[in-house]
Amino acid sequence: MKYDIILAGVGGQGILSIAFVLDNAALEEGLFFKQAEVHGMSQRGGAVQSHLRLSDKLIYSDLIPLGQAEMILSVEPLETLRYLEYLRPEGVIVSSSTPYTNIPDYPPLEEVCREIKKAPVHVLIESEKLAKEAGSAKAQNMVMLGAASIFLPLKEESLKKYIQILFERRGDQIIQTNLKALDLGRQAALASRRE
Image (cartoon, rainbow, N blue to C red; front, side):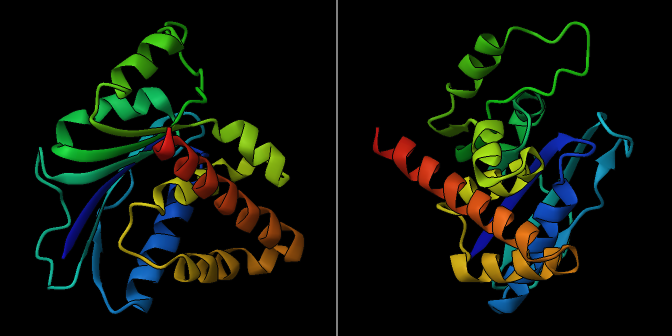
């Protein structure tokens, strides 16, 4: 088994938090993982991406070759389009439909979403709306992780365990908000796959 993921978004959207949960859940389940450094602007609003590779066998490279990713998991729709060349033809796109409008010439959202929908398997999630429903707009990354979880070769329980560990220093309310965000994202992705 091999599962390669491109994580994409902008600085401040919690890409590192998604990676922490995925990496540790993979280890919990006896898988190997490699993660490339998060590349891009470290300041809030700059484009960021990371390669995350999961496998039941040793992984020798931390970079995903073009056309080989099983998934693009993106917390920002325009950033999704930036990495399409990495996706294998039957790959999955799990993307937020909530733009982070940090440039003056951000293209019309309808056009961006139309491009995402050209992928044979895609899930577009209203991450900001669901994160607010969970209790905090900052939980959009966990909404997106929840949406991706329906495709990932990892158990939901493992993901939840490492969300609890990630946020334990911040208190029970933050843990519960992020767990609810994960659940809402998962439910939204399941509902969209049934449509």
